[in-house]
Length: 168
Image 1 (cartoon, rainbow, N blue to C red):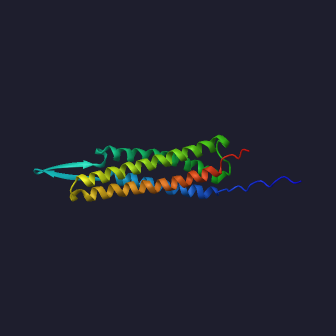
Image 2 (tube, helix red, strand yellow; image 1 turned 180 degrees about the vertical axis):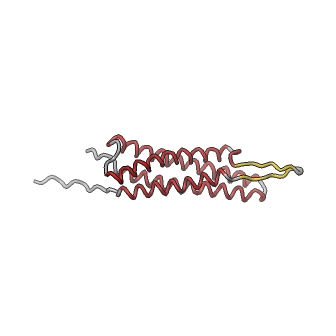
Image 3 (cartoon, rainbow, N blue to C red; image 1 turned 90 degrees about the vertical axis):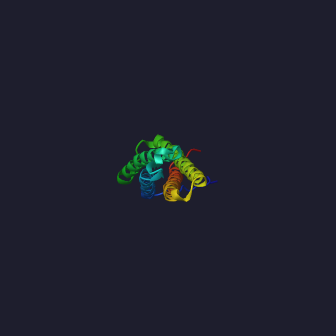
C-alpha cells in the first residue's frame, strides 16, 4: 500500500512578495507626507492661529504607526531583495517566523492608526464648521493611504504564512 501523497505547497514567487512590500512602502510614504504637511489656519479677532495635524493625538498616532510600519517594511524589503537576488533566505527558519509574526503585528498596527485617524476626523467634523473641511479631507486621505498600506501589509502577511516551515 502506497503512502498518501503529500499536500501541495503553495509558494508565492519571491518577486511578488517584493512587489507587495514596495507598494506598501509607497502607500505609507505618501500617507506620511500628506499627514505631516496638513495644516489649518484659524482666524480669531484678526489673529491667525495655525494648527497642524500633529496638534491632535490621533494624528500623532497615525504618524507614529506609519513611521514604524515604514521602518519595518523597509527592512523586510531589503531582506526580500536579498532573497530575490541570491535565492537564499537570510536567517533560515527563525527568520520565517519573525517575518510571519512581524507582518501580522505591523499590518494590524497600521489598521489601528488608520482607524484612530478616521475617528478623530469624524469627531472634528461633527464638532466644527465647514471651514475646516479641507483639513479634515486631507486627514482622511492620509488615513485612507495608511489603510491601503494595511491591505498590502496583510497580503504580505498571507504570503509569509506560505513560507512557514511545514511541520507534521
